[in-house]
Length: 239
Image (cartoon, one colour):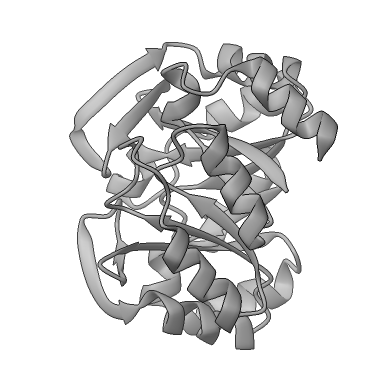
């Protein structure tokens, strides 16, 4: 199972939110490249990079951060936030992203996204961000009527292979992940599921591996020292 640290960006800085609420912003580092280099030094190979400015403004904003991290590290970057046009997607890839995550646009313009999945085979990840099982969009500010499992199954039929599922109520709260929801998705859908939201300790990480997740995104637990670099190294050494 992949360990995937998260870097969320506002104004070019590394921040974390609670439940996606922008008013809860806490800055952890002014320089995201430093953070990415630290992760790489732990032996991490993957990075989940989110442009929170982009998610709000509905177009890519922080592409310079992708460029800088891609230039200074060899991390495989999955980038999301504000990707609404082919130009945004191409900018993310040309800036150094290995994959991109589509969320809001996957709800608002599915036919276009089906074409993207075909065009960029294996490079598109579906972002299924939900609260009370309903998919939310636009930086989690707008709710749709789509059930998270139905949403994932629709995209599975169109060839999506990887899904990041975030339970917004858990995100940034350090209260444990939505194990039951992830178990249900894994039982019903044939996708590589990446768990996101609520990871608070290594026991949570091990639980995600045990139920069959292909990856786990970890944010605040690392920044708050709940999960230490040595624990991550030990996990990856024994994976």
